[in-house]
Image (tube, rainbow, N blue to C red; front, top):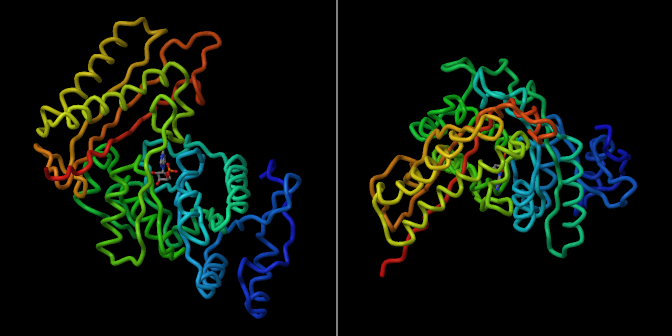
Length: 381
Ligand code: AMP
């Protein structure tokens, strides 16, 4: 937290808190948590919570004041994709809660939990800048709280297991959570559903915000909200992309220039398949061959280059699936549409050159990229 501008004591009530008694009961927490932007501005901004009881008290106060809460769960390392979710949440709610927690149970035993980027100071600055902007916008909600718990807070009974089957209290959504990303990362959706259930219970938001970028995750969350009768609305926001179309992701910092340039093939392959659908093709083979063909030709071209120039990758899957079940389909039902999605694994950079930008981790870390395109339902003619 070194780079964060000063923490100051605050004796103000939360926005719109009217009753003096409630005001008093909140004061202790506010003295601990109210975060100010220091030298740049004197605007009040959000509170940071690490534990559940204080956050719940804050939430209850918001409810008593008839204010709505939108929740944006993240693992930090915030980029414009995350920011777009917060913006939308602020447009639709009085108060936005952003959670920053790298959830260990969604990483397999051999996955990249330790190397997941953690950029707390930069994240706080981004949220602070956004909140300052929101404060100036008439009628807009604000970021009210950041919840950044420790793992012992999120998993109070046992140290969480990353094994399958693994001991612990888990939410599993099957078979949806075992397909596609779940096939490659068997504990992933169990971890995601479990941590989201915990966050939903802690924050009790009216609306929760997720990115289209992780399309199967949105299907899992929608299913969980439906099947467990959770009283909240799931909002899905479009994928935010770089200028060339690469989907923004916290993991992109590991790519470096060589893999970054080649990695765009995933989106381009999906776009090629989408163009088939837009031309009226409806069968799996007619749509998917374009994506497979494009991915294979990029791979062949890379394989022909010398090791110091190439960026090799494996295609994990290219899928055409039902939007609700994520099960593979042979034919697009135009009344429902479909999801085109894919995952590739960019291999470590071979023979890095003097002065070459190999990204964080010096090109040694394999980078899994996922992306998708929604094939929208077509109106009957
Ligand atoms: P993460 O921190 O990667 O777990 O992501 C937190 C939320 O941000 C999830 O709902 C993601 O789907 C969403 N998200 C991540 N990248 C993007 C993106 N490029 N565009 C839109 N939403 C995104």
